[in-house]
Length: 507
Image (cartoon, rainbow, N blue to C red):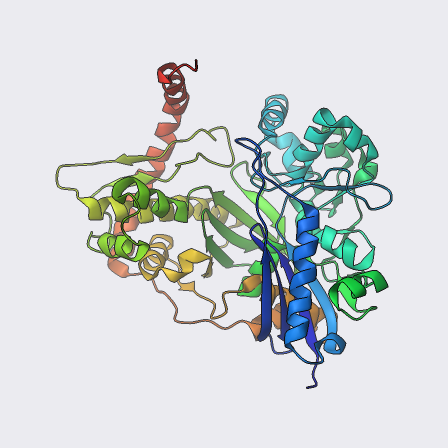
């Protein structure tokens, strides 16, 4: 066989995957190796970087073994990976901590609260581009400084998961603008580390790696990495990117005016814009093509359906049966609203937000409860879309769906009608792999712009259009949802106090 190939490596929370892709964007071979989260206590989530490397090594060997001659045909390697996981290396490249705290690790919450108490948003948003949250690596680095000072002192550099794989492949270290932008330490205008934020957080600037364009070549496969993986030594490796912006690219959401709905356990609603939106309710990540993804993450996305399945049916019904039940209720659920905050909110002063049904009446049944959960998540996402549209003065033209939620037609129709924006679903669900391929295609000169590569590689199924009757119902309902959202905030601290007072005392 002949023909150029690209190798993509995706370091996820549940597994590492490797894929061989041809120059037209078709995935020829894909293999994965699973790894576990380590949860030593509530609020902590860790993984071993060496497990990521072992998964990458094994997955790469598997796909190379499946396709004759693949080793010699790979023209570029691109790695993407889960965001926010803090990996610390010493001056010799050895890990100073065996495990890395992950994106969902909450051990930094007290550091975040202290920062918020001491700093007003106007003082840090222009320098960091983001609102404080326990996810950001800047706070994780503070935690290591305070709780493991020996490891902090030994550490020469702090990097992200995909950077560790790049290091094991090439011996070179860099961070891309996407991971850097969500560190809470990068200035969004200069795309470089912010001395203001580094000083304010009491960190050592010398421990931060160079920030480079994700399309640059970071290095080449070393002889040792070639022996470990079966790759050809000297194969170029790109800087690569954080998995979220790479998946946006691989879904085709890569131009201002386009949006993305990625619904899995949580739900991320994204608007592509030319600049970040400096708002306390909005997060920002630098995209591969040089734009910004303004986004909001709802902790409760598909998890709302999972909760309903357990709470109402003891897991006896399938998700398809729950969706079929929800389809029996009318749009708007006869004025029943659901606030989708089963595990609180990620940003803002009300991370202790609670979920609730509001407007229950004797005429409501199970079908209303199920549909109101789907609608409530759509209303929460719509609220943030409107914030982003008002700030940018540019309405979203299309939303591209990804994640498990993209497979639920009723939910897509509800969202399209609530957003009043058409929704597209990519035919290839492996958006991160496709994004890596588009990056490799641009880096090897097949396209002049990475957006052109993505648009060539990505195709869509049927377009989900808003239902005019549903859209009118949701247009009238959205302001009521927004009022309920704000008025409920006054009660969250009271609910916390009540829960603490009624909690059984431990013996």
